[in-house]
Length: 407
Image (cartoon, rainbow, N blue to C red):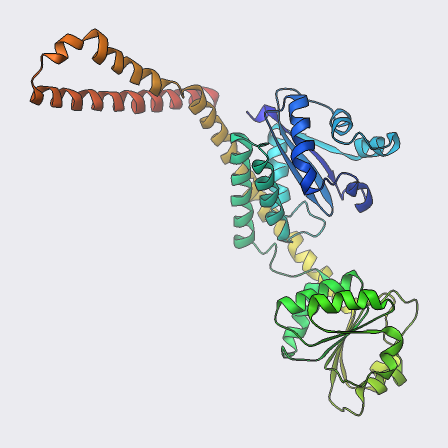
């Protein structure tokens, strides 16, 4: 069965996020579009995985179609230029290489950030969605089960995911190490993607006292609604007197936006040491602020250094993960061989049952009718025992012989 497995992958290794985004299919459209493609090509099974940095099609088919053929049917709206780029930059995996790739993806060693556990949830969700649309079958079910099982083992028995590497995770861990209380007043400057992610992360972990400042008041309002805080225009920052314990800043400004005067005004006479997390490039905080006031200052450079160190540790764990994947590949290959035997012999039990039915109702009908009740009961028990043994014994022996020959 492995020879019928193909994976067409479009990933961050060769394409940027916008190019990969061309292949995203809305959940509402997946049933129709993917179902039509499966029918068009006569695929036995199909699964669609879409994340922010990869789109993959897992296909079980007797024919090896090209990526160009696949895209032409699934994405007729693509321009010839985009189709060519996507085809040139795609990767196609087959047989054991496809299984190894699927294992690598779910175990995160093929991810943009090695060790990020979110991918295992995305793979499981992709399977469940494809299954609900009637796209998958027995083979992808077995493959996904082995992939998820292996990924769980990787995350629990190695340190691949133990050291955080994302800026958001590292910044949170820093706050935790500083024993910042959950009721701390958090002043947020900037409502872009990084700060939005950071704030939602903080809210998820119990922080609740937020005030947001941003150039676009609409974006500030949107973020404040999501996290349950207040929103103001960035121009009002110098006039804010509500106090703060943590200053989280990340804007797209090309120069420092918080100087000594603004910081002094924000303190409003407070003498306590404050925590500043500045994850903007370039820095939002004027260096004179750090020189002039007692702060716990966390810069993007500091977080990036920790991230790089942790990535090295994760890189060292990849070798251990590779061993797990090799073991899983061997186990899955054996599983598919056993499953092939089961499928090939699935009619044997029914044939034996049919032989019993014919013997009882036709061949030996008159003899059985002349039996007394006690003899008939014993006869039925013997017949049932023989039937059971003829189903299990020879099937087990045949499976062992076939697998031995295959080996």
